[in-house]
Length: 300
Image 1 (cartoon, rainbow, N blue to C red):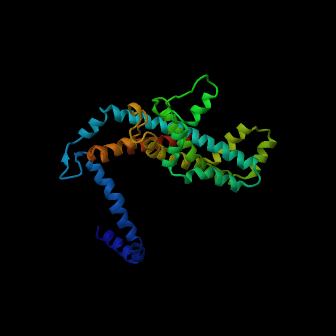
Image 2: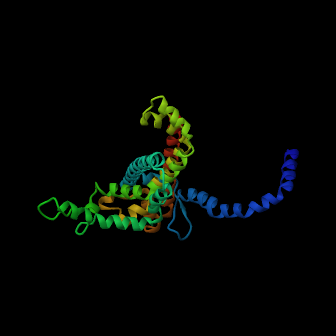
Image 3: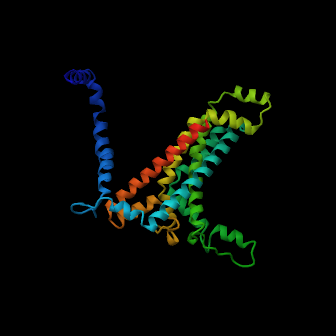
């Protein structure tokens, strides 16, 4: 034991400049990342309004959550938004990247900028644009449909319990397709063109080429893309908050887990319950990420 301790002490003395150089980062990480993570875990077993001493309540917060219909609905809404936004965003980004990489021979940089432009627009502004387009009285969509009807078409898209989630998905697709497009373009350009030439000589069609060459060689890029889309999709907050003006929509039809967590903590000042929600959210992200990673590993 003394030999091990002496060896560790000797190695620390030998590398003391390294430890001194990384010490500021480690101190800041412990203060602003590690400590809040550990503290919120214990806070999830208490009842606390932000003032005074937290009251220990055991697993009551978690029991309350899974008996709360709004929280159950927020889980359903989040999974709905994450699933459809991920499938459609990644699918559209891959198709655009494949077409640009194989059929556009000039000005590829122009397409990178164009598709990346929505990412530069704040999500709040994007949600406002969508709310204007789908507004009841002066929206572009209702005005367009009115051209084909006898009277004025005035459907309340933003108050519809069915359409509010597809509108949130539409905002996410518009905003994040360019980001994944850039990832896929980078991945496609690393595949040697000789492989495509050999496949063409062997008589492979486009589908067979994508299935047997493109997707297997882009597996690491796809994994990064799916994980980032999963983490972002399950944590979605800005888009439903702005589109529903912080209400969650009619009958909470657009409320997400992130949005309900914010309401619980900073509107109802129930920080213990909000901490418990954050760990349920974390477990959902971890579960979906592991399933996605396992699925992609098996497919490749």
